[in-house]
Image (cartoon, rainbow, N blue to C red; front, side, top):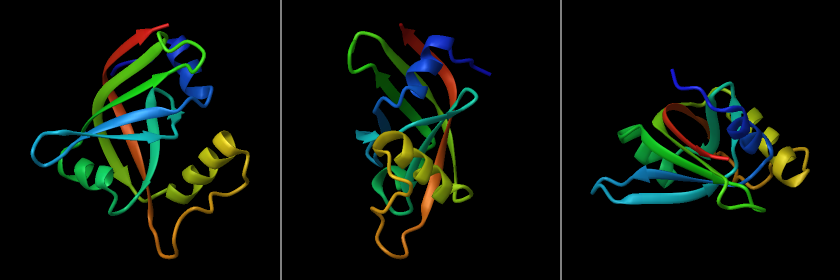
Length: 130
């Protein structure tokens, strides 16, 4: 089990934006800017069923996440690992992230019938430049 350094935990908890890299079927990287939360040393990302990153991760669970401080982009966290994807807690996570990133009580950007999923990143390698 890989542990996040305290400074890296603080960076994630500060509500900085992150970039997640997944792998397309042809091996090319696919990048998305995402909101991010933390559960212990695991990173949590919300997405919806059918989005490119969700489809990629169901096929190949390898992922890289990069987070850096807006005020100091040379202070960054890179987490490489594998993910598990579940629908459990999907609505709760996106609402929690909306409060953190926008101040809204609920996330209202989903079309009717959209199913939220939780992407849990299990770190296997951590690079911290704090």
